[in-house]
Image 1 (cartoon, rainbow, N blue to C red):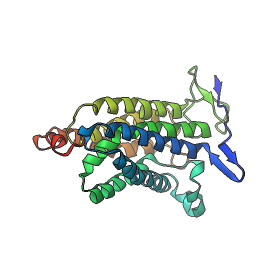
Image 2 (tube, rainbow, N blue to C red):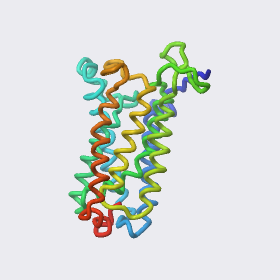
Image 3 (cartoon, rainbow, N blue to C red):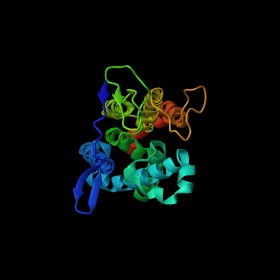
Length: 270
């Protein structure tokens, strides 16, 4: 049995300025996305310049933070936010929704594509492989904060988390970091190394993320304000993954249609 290290939530203290681990993980996520984007843009066949990466990641960052926070408030903590509206500003405490962030990023990419004269999937297919390592960084932030722990377990790596009682539990944050982060990154990076039809990379991202996230939800304790929605196992996270999986599967199928299978060569999208 292991015990959570109970990290200090403040990573760096500079006088009155406190940099929290959760915020630092977001900085790491955007830094990794920027670096990987410039690596991909170095290939002229993709039709992207390094300066384009700087621009699009500015839009994406706004979408992630704004959408992630609003999504959490709507999907997971609306009653609490109505009781204490100012809590919406305390993003360093956590409380970010991936699904809300995804919606925010989609809106940001739509805006960027329209302003830069690109197709939406030209942008989305380029961005998709840059996202998973950022997700991994966010899940490490959850682990450091000691929140979003898993259900009780007798496995050798089960861990006692502060505030979760004396029972050892699945370190579900680390499971998510490995599946939604490292495994998903490896899959998308490998898949997108070769020219793919428009929509294919985005579709694979949506489908694979939904599968990985839904799998971990079986050993993750659901948010206390909702609990299990049905059958003593269905969670809000799994419900939100259903439209993602359906959309991803549809995009993958659609990308195989003759009209779209040639789009990549014409537009340079991934």
